[in-house]
Image 1 (cartoon, helix red, strand yellow):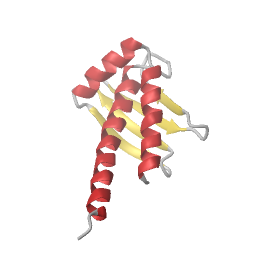
Image 2 (cartoon, helix red, strand yellow):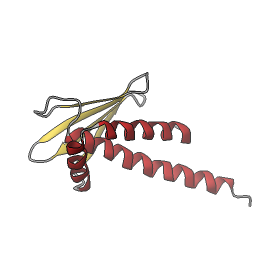
Image 3 (tube, helix red, strand yellow):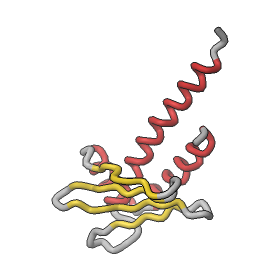
Image 4 (cartoon, helix red, strand yellow):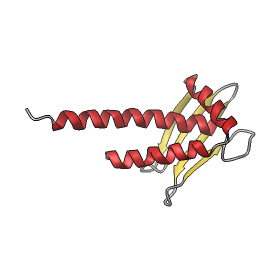
Length: 116
């Protein structure tokens, strides 16, 4: 995955996070800060990411990128909505992971670009 692909996916994730109601975004930030969200699996070539959010109970969240540049989220908590605090926290976890990967990609690009 190159810089532009990763940046595009990060933009889509950020838009999806901002589409969550403010109460879920706030709670998602708190959950993410507790470091209780783990990437459990990646299904297909970047098509779906499964994450586990461990709180009082463990909830599984699926994040998929649709062909029309849409982020689809699904959580198996009682809220029964596409947006909840668990999906917000899961999105933040992917953003943090990929932002770190993007920084590493940028670092390696600049290191390779140095004339020796």
